[in-house]
Image 1 (cartoon, rainbow, N blue to C red):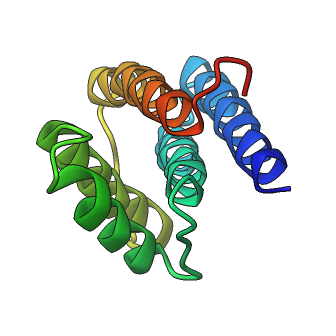
Image 2 (image 1 turned 180 degrees about the horizontal axis):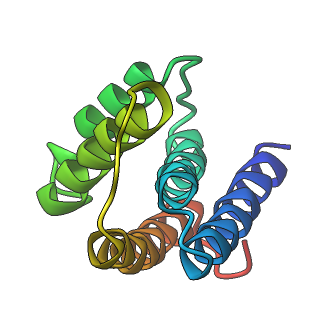
Length: 133
């Protein structure tokens, strides 16, 4: 059962990243930032499940990710920082007025997110001791 949830969340991450690309291609930068963040979030949810962990709050997910994967060196600090920054950018885009994002910056975040997800997937595969998840 847990394998199915992990697979589902990974699929959500990939689909959400595809949505981010569509938004980016159409210069809908606030929406792209939102989808970039959620792609990361869904992938991290899948990763946490490999240790039987979850949280109902974004802050809890970030805290568990940093505690269980970044601090022990399983995931690079660079990715931990990136996830935290994207949370902040998503918050600004969703809740603040007159927010504008630079296309090139959002494009670089999109590219970093692809790398982030690929790195997390390697950790998930290793944790699950499978290559077909």
